[in-house]
Image (tube, rainbow, N blue to C red; front, side):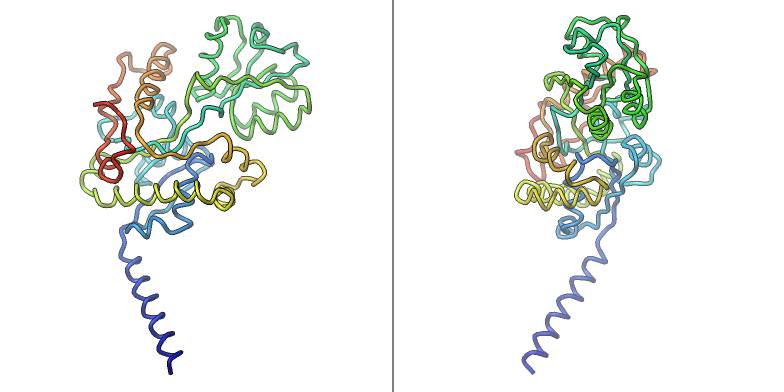
Length: 325
């Protein structure tokens, strides 16, 4: 009888919890296949969103741009997006707000060159063919890297190429170097054996992933927005406390090999939710570059301070907000 009573009590608790979760508001978050939004996958897998009163699902798309476009088309409630994509996408920023940065890295973008092409140091890139995905973080970093090393744009032969094709072009000798990150770099390194040299400069650009939602949704659903942020913060803490398990969760969600993802999450990516002053500086710097290189139609820079809504994160954890306003 005692066992029956305990089992019945457990069943009642389970049913009540299930009913409570069923009544939770539902939202979706768009994300690419990159691991920098991984703390959201962890939060979903470990139930942290539901624990904070929100049924949030992370929708992963093949590319970050596709993910952002899906959000802008109204498919998803929230978007994750890097700074370059925000700047280069033509949308009305008054109708959308950036509410938090999710993660960052200073080591993601790499210029990989073939030593057999006579490249041993940055100056050797002059006169060479370089493959770059156009209007990407790699595009921005490459231009800044060239300027830093005194190489003029006319001194290099830039070949704009789809990210999926650049590693093959590099291996086949169609280009002498490439600027990208993630799997294209890893594939090229593996295929080239020892015939490569890599250049990096973490001071050029801090790659970061932001969380964005619509202005009207934020104003009309403040509790839901705060619940998403609390769940994300719990996911961030879990990554910090249980890294090995988190790597497995993100690898499964993003369809990565654990062996490839492990060093990225351990050494390259900092999962830290916040709104630092450097975020605003990065947005303004990339904006200037985009206008100067005619990558956007506008000639006057956006006011990104008006694009950032610090209030939801400040309500949840004021210590995470450091933007001067």
